[in-house]
Image 1: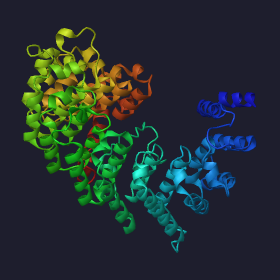
Image 2: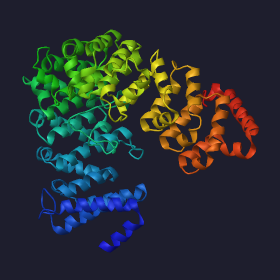
Image 3: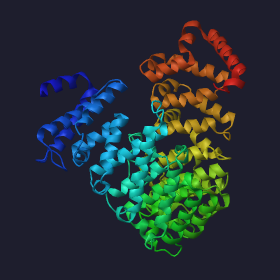
Image 4: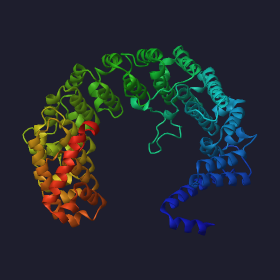
Length: 588
């Protein structure tokens, strides 16, 4: 068996990775004598579900074939669905197969789990299956089913979500601080709001992101409120009514479980019940974060995420209250603190009040302490806000130059910002993401002349190296797109890079910089660039990025048919683009 697996692994790297992962999981499940944690089962059954677990991750077939596979595997749990869910391995298999199962199989689980919810909510394995059932019921209800003409399945899905949610609400005092029941509460809240895709347990969530179950962060554009049954909304509104009456409400932000639940509830209420959302926000600010609250509350990694959700979901009036009551007297301390600086960044990113931004900027000047603390994200947020609101740009720029000790040496301005290190302390320069973001925003300022001149003061090789990095490619885009960078400055950049375009175009990030430069170059400059590329033809053919640039600029035509033919071809292309610009836009 092992030799067969090895042969298959040698044939496919992708297959090898999957096999290796499954072997690790299998080894972990077989460590204990019970073959996996939780309720014990016979060795034969354990090996069967282990095989199902392995096959599910490598099974390639049509949707119908996967459904048959899932139904056959889940049929082995018939009449003992709950018992199987109490086993570590089998519960994990059930979670993975439920999205593939038919409605009849799903409803069989509804009936079995609905008989005794309390022990299921408190179990570390069965509770995850309960979450998966809630999510599946909600997702199928929202998506609809063309075969469910009479709405029988839809009614059962709705009743299941309501039944579990009512049970959780009636026992919220007990489940709020339960390690495994509290996440089920969060899932129920998202399901009632019609937002199952926001739940950390959802299989539809981006698998590439690491989940922190105590911190919920949602962009406004990710929330698309669907049409929901009225009973869902009524029950959802009962949750804030219930918890706001508790005498110990102010302690909610002191515990990671209750803090996480509050964050979910705020997000769910934002679009479903604005009135309840506002009431809950005011309650949180008045009782959990009063103006005279102990300083530790404003620097707590558990409490601050709740405040961050309020900030992200609120409008100007609520933001003003937060600023006046909580932030205005703590700006410097929060900006230099490891945890609180994230909250301050989110507030600055959300701020649309120019006067408030200027107050924050004045409080954080001078910036030496902020630089030394390493919390450069606050500077990025400040810079982006100055660009967005067109306020305090000169003040920010002068303060940054002073903090970096480059007031009298403009040529060192960009290197100092990229390294985010004062000039006297620079030993070995290392570009940073924050420095790149600040330069991009400054290029969007109304007077970016000094940064432009600093970039143009680079030696051609150094400039090419900078613009061919991941950070530098975004600087190129900002330089070319900024309405405040003049045509003469763009032309100087194009001329500065002459002789280096082949080197730039053959790398991933360099080719991206090249694309941005090509888009803003006039016809004369493009002719000079393609001539430069022709001289480095052999260099371009060595990489896929280089070959892509060759195709983009029609380099083969230039080399085989001459410059005049190439010019006529591009003139025809440009005339057609101008002709269709009113329809497709001004795309180069």
